[in-house]
Image (tube, rainbow, N blue to C red; front, side):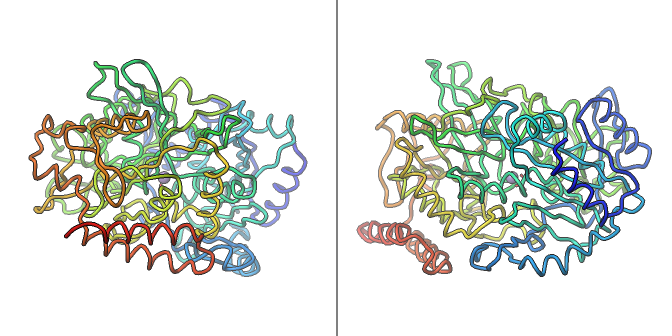
Length: 586
Ligand code: OXD
Ligand code: MN
């Protein structure tokens, strides 16, 4: 046992005062014990064993159902280091205001010591964390989402590597006493008052994104909110694509896409569906690993029509959180296949009928399931050196303005496209849904330092890599005049991936240049086959000059808040966009 871990556990126990301390080894026996306890005390509800073997339902506290960005802080020495993109709390204030919430917080509870590894067991890029938590639900989820227990302790002991301490307590679950704090200087995490995934599974957003982004900046690599997919072309050639989308915008569905052109040989396999750590390889390419080993996905909207591979993956060994329950103890959520049941128990445990006004499952209801159950998992998902990325997609929900897909002109322009991307907000975070906000690289809620310095880092990394990926923006969510989505999305997104593949491989046909970037022709996407009218296809791929002039102004206003820290390259890119738009005949 690494003595530094032992002394930290001792120190935390002195404050939190748990009745017991349990060191987790990640074994099946330990998991079964925890599940037994949770079934006995109601934390877990057993599901129909024929329909859902090895699976459980958890109902969270109704005030604790999503990430709480307004209660999430970066505790750097100065406000400038955290940047306008973060809430900042000085470390001294954190000690005064938040540390006391841990005082005696674990009395009457067990404190679990959870060693975990982010990344494949034998990858030099993987990293160790230790989470101390008083929530057995968190332990059961961490066991799916990370490589937990012995494998992490072995890494610590054999390699003497650094580890990231994360302290988590449910506290009293009151939002008034809820804080998710990150100390970039000491690479430490404190989370109190929430059991929700993104707030409480500290390996995920807190470590693999907020703390890791700081480590990446200091050590020359990148931690990104991106899926990684393997795209196979008919001749067997494979290409890897990383894609950043804000939360609940379909990353899991894209990463597990079932191709309508599988017969022709076009197919997708998954390497990761939420987080991607990128290092520059000796060949000057971007090499990416998925630091996680499970999926914490949004259940509502998942069906055989939208993600058949996920439906197959979820049929066993899954923890469901805040979904609805049928009378024969199966799970149910809005958007699932088949008729809506006449009676359900809703996510809060109340009787529900179709006449009920509120949805039966919470809109941010989740599943936690092991990656190994994904029927289209890539053979390379645990490769120690990662997989080489040839294209990066930035996407978001935009009802207007942004075409279905376009390619940026070069790396710097691509960084500008990522830096200015915007999306309508979703239920993955507490707060209003459907409000447009800029969410650079889909990292707004997940970056551990000043966004302007992060863009500098992107520019520098691109300059250092002799062969960086091509950058694209995508938007599956464009609507027509009647407010309907134009693009069918889901499996049909394969048409966009196919075009991306052709672009990366030098295909010049099927595209046209616009002031914002290169867009496909309707023919290149097979818009006809999809039954899109010429007008629909035009709207989908259009770059409207006036709309883009105001978009460019709004982008400039957004960038301005970063003041002198903003890399000059991005200001130049903004001017370049305005110039190109001005040249368009009206
Ligand atoms: C997630 C999120 O849970 O982005 O992945 O909120
Ligand atoms: Mn995410």
